[in-house]
Image (cartoon, rainbow, N blue to C red; front, side):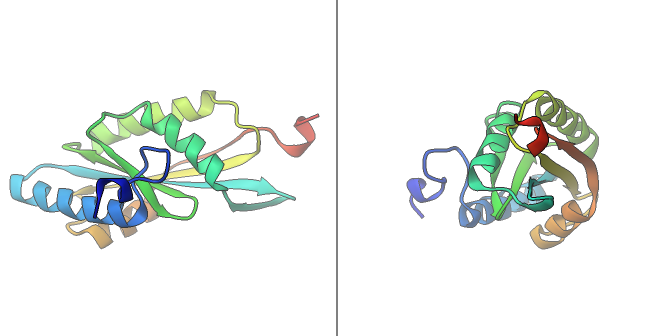
Length: 158
């Protein structure tokens, strides 16, 4: 894999394939060095004609940029699925990660999104909640920490 194929075009977001590769590598490193690793998932949906739908790429990029400003350069952020971002906090236990998530949510809450959004944040920690990448992802998705709804509703855009 070349370094240009690691990132989404024009951003610091890892592609889904690159994210899987790096998550697996960092998880192996955490096992070997007996360090913590926390996976944070951020699901972004937007309101469209009264229904919540998967957020478009532009909205996901906005959320990713907000998140990117609040984490260390060594932490990893990438796409896992359409509308879902994932963040790997290296050498971070669950308690430390909860403080990072609080900062992320504060940043998101203070940002004025042009459309109504719903953002769900979940997290799981190695080795506390899971010991492999697949179970870590499942645990993070099933451990909602924050459900946030904000942005302008269609009636507020006038």
